[in-house]
Image (tube, helix red, strand yellow):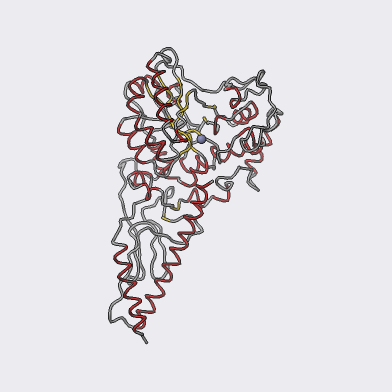
Length: 473
Ligand SMILES: [Zn+2]
């Protein structure tokens, strides 16, 4: 039996809900192409589910924590066992990047510790020098650290509009959280290098931790490989913090260390960043790089840094040729997978800034090779038509049913949501309207549907809260 109070409550709910949710289009997160078209930063950063990231989560260390070899990972353990005897007996330095208590001989710099002396030429045999500058004159190795930033579409669109490629140094934890954003770098023709798993100071870590920080970021069945399909052969230590112990580890894993000579310090924000860019441009205009090029450090870790990259692009381009580091080194096979080819420096300068991706790479990304822009098929289902629908990805319905996007492929099936632990989530929820003459059964179904929906939304919110907590680290 309906009471007037119940009817009033339900009709109010319906009115409030309707006014609050007038059909906001849910973006299509079918694959890298559709995700690249999302312009709203908040929508770009809405969590979503992606099988290689989430189904394999037990194969990775927890994101944003110092990596260690995952229990039972015999491949990683065997690899570590095979190289650990080659690692110099250099003790870890400081605590979590706090080096204030380190007693180090800065004069002789026995470990070639970059943080102390900017040393880039190892004092051990068999380890090639770090790359901190590029050989081509009047050129700069162009790129950004700390990606993929979930809201980097405006920056990457900007680069496309300028036919500009970059070297992107991706953090393993970000790759796992934002897999389709990571794929965009490959799809757009940027060079992907690793930037550790959790972005900690490497020389403070034990050798096994340092190994795991690299291993889980680059190697097969690990972050970049499993998400993007390629295995990088270059990396940049967070904060540049490397020494001959860390170099020995990354060398054993087939990686070249890429550092820099000039720093925008864009991650610090403030007016000093403009001064830093200005000082670098002044050096370039004064002939500093007339004989040998350089590398300038920038970040895509926040909107400020990305805005500065775009703001100063024209000025930088007017005085220096801006190229990915690998291109500057004529490294035409930048990945372990040799089917992906990059242009030479001269080809790049002639306008060929990217070689076509092979069909196998496009297939891995779930992008049809014939049609670059995939269809935006939507696949919401709603078993209970009286309740809620979503336009893409998972939907929340009165019966608590969720669906994954029908356009998903084996490699890139996605659905909105914050991970496997979140049963459903949808950023677009259309609330139902209860008929004025609703029957008892309709009201009961309505109440049950609303309860299910709010439970789902709460689960989604909990997922977002976890993600937000990760960002706070
Ligand atoms: Zn960094």
